[in-house]
Amino acid sequence: MTAIIVDDEKHCRDVLALLLQKFCPQVQVLASCADGQAGVDAITLHRPDMVFLDIEMPGMNGFDMLEACRYTNFKLIFTTAYNEYAIKAIRHNALDYILKPVDKDELVQAVQRAAQQRSSQPSNQIEGLIEYLNRQKAGDRIALPTLEGLQILQSEDIYYCESEGGYTRFFLNNGKVSLISKTLKEVEEVLESKGFCRIHNSYLINLRYVQKYIRGDGGEVIMANGSNIPVSRNKKQDFLNLLEKI
Image 1 (cartoon, rainbow, N blue to C red):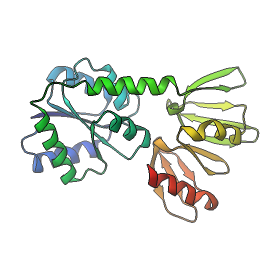
Image 2 (image 1 turned 180 degrees about the horizontal axis):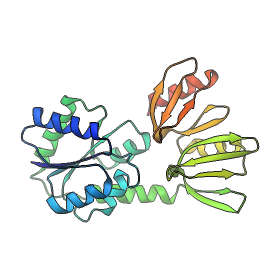
Image 3 (image 1 turned 60 degrees about the vertical axis):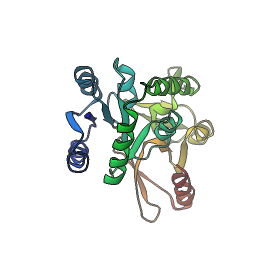
């Protein structure tokens, strides 16, 4: 079986390639790609049997990459940190995934499942995933008042929000920062049903972008954009309870 690895972290690509070589010798890795566009190009060129795909990548994420692919007749295995939004979408469409750090036994099982499914009719699971994501986006738009007017955002565009008096700063996944003329409490009322959690009097975070929690008095969270956000002691347990449900 031929395969392509797409992940923006070189260490993750190298470890996965090494695990495949050692424990899944029947898999030949044709390309190891550091971004989504390179992944699209490699898939178009090689038409692999399977693709190992990370989700959280700068610029073009894993979902965007799939939408850009014209050739999708391959078995798809996501390799991702635990991301509630992403895992929900993957499970909804019965696609396979392995949590990082990759466990060799889970990898072997995922490859075996892909091999068993090779002889079956090509499925429309990837197309179904894209349709599902687009439906979710359509119903997930929010209009926020800025000093210039209204800004329309998807909740997935937002990494986290920071209180600034009667205003709130929105830190977005395109690297931009928007100042919204609402208090953080008002913003929380809009976003808490969309996967956000108030972890501090000054911070509301998007749980789908949590990469790591570091223990401490209250502790701190490392977000997908590298930001370190403090967790207050009185909100710590509620936050940890939400993480356990992801």
